[in-house]
Length: 89
Image (tube, rainbow, N blue to C red):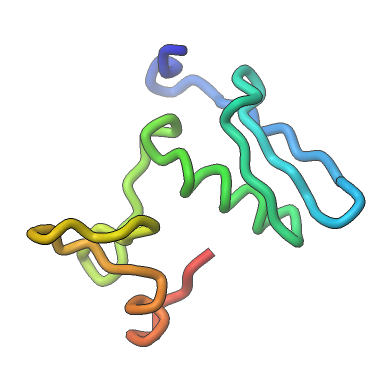
């Protein structure tokens, strides 16, 4: 699926499940995330699919990570962000 044109609105559908919330791209249900709150579910889908939503997340001027950092990149992990006073979703 191609990305929407710049300025186009992307819809995220949120659904209450028995034990949590589920959020997915309105056009591509394979792009999804979940969480204990609506905000957590939306945060999970967006940060887990940054390329799809065409965003970069930074913390303290460095690309914030939600993946194992590569040997030579400056990306930080959730644990490092938390230790530095950052907030992770």
